[in-house]
Image (cartoon, rainbow, N blue to C red; front, top):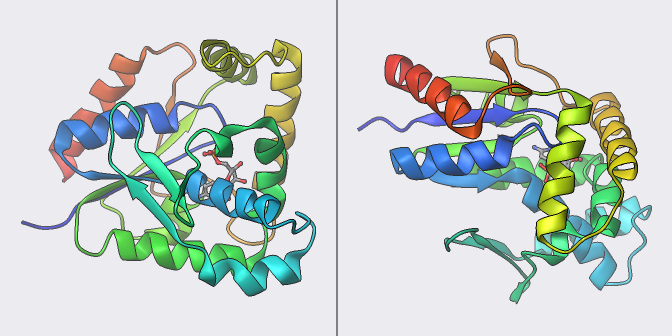
Length: 222
Ligand code: C5P
């Protein structure tokens, strides 16, 4: 069978990972959360007492970072140098510094290479910011998910509440705006809709409705 590549890009909180996970399990494809990879690199810096601003040192070490995904329910586990960092990579400190670390050329080069390797032998659903534009430019299906800032902040707020994190709705909104700005304005492969991507505004759609739309697209194109 031919290998299918599905790229799902979009800004923070647009629903990418929720949707990508469901699509992957529905079609039995491998799910690759590229945001988790950049978060893990950011956490690596912290755990090794390297300042997030220290591009040279991070660039020097990024190829030595052991990073694996272990399938598990309900979320796949992220293992960094032998340690389960699945929840640590979602902390506020990592979230607020990941855009800086992910802007480094060497970091992007290394992660892009690893992401391409993961799609070599299997069909994948990959979510991120630059999958359709840079990582998998030949993906058969490219989806660009968007939603209003208010809706995205509300979703993050609910997710955080469920995890016992208590950032205010307004702080979350400011964090999302700041991260979107940095991710769309960086020099190398910024967040951008690929010219051949299908844009879906999820502001007023349920998860099921988005999954249904994308499933229809896969069935007609893949
Ligand atoms: O998807 P998530 O919000 O976990 O991504 C965290 C951060 O990782 C983004 O804000 C962005 O800075 C970076 N990222 C990236 N390229 C990707 C995926 C994520 O630069 N393909």
